[in-house]
Image 1 (cartoon, one colour):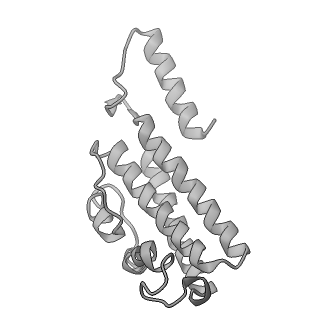
Image 2 (tube, rainbow, N blue to C red; image 1 turned 135 degrees about the vertical axis):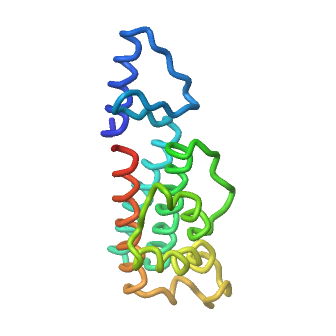
Length: 166
């Protein structure tokens, strides 16, 4: 069980002891505690899984897949914030810059991380499809690109984790 789910389950247990019932599609702030919708935690857990996939892809020298999985990790982390802290259904969008604009009042990224979002956003397509910017993504992406994408994804996940747990 993840750290987040332990917090969530512990809190719900306390609420049940005191006959408090919480609706699963709401975010509540009671005292110093914030209850995050389980769906938001699912999105964040999947973001972390995608980050681990990116790390494995880097080790396997599959740099295009590492870049794509970093995009996915960041996208899912941003959508976790939208669901859990903004209480909004995330848009059906994959543009990381656009998604970040929706949560920048909650998550403050450093300027270098924010400036890297447009490039990583392109990986949603260019890292997967031939002739979508590169003739063959599997041969065209570099180790340096994958390392940079991993650095950005790690930073985003750290910021999102902090926002979801404090």
